[in-house]
Length: 117
Image (cartoon, rainbow, N blue to C red; front, side, top):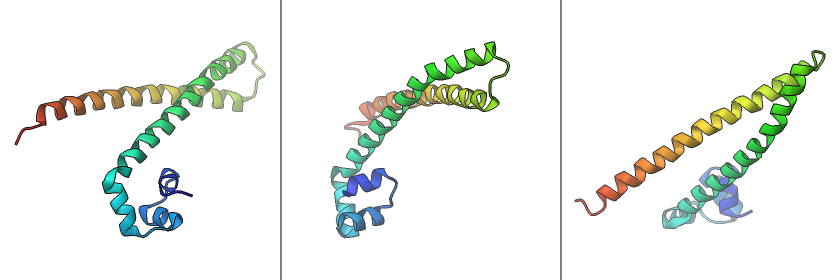
């Protein structure tokens, strides 16, 4: 397993270094040398891929809810699962919106502070 893969799976820097067969000092040099940005980029990509999977489940959840509305004998577990998907997708949209706003604020701030001493 590579150092980056290990970090993406949630390992600590120490554990990731050990799994990659490098010293902790080397791991920190890598992080300070640009690997940290790569890891963050990969984390965002994985997050987006999982969000897309969740969004794709939304259609099934809505269909399940519609079936439950029509069928009073449907299992309550199905209702709970459908509600959970819908609620989580809504939360994801809210978080994504906040993340986009924060990115815009950071870009605006960084563009104003570049070259300011």
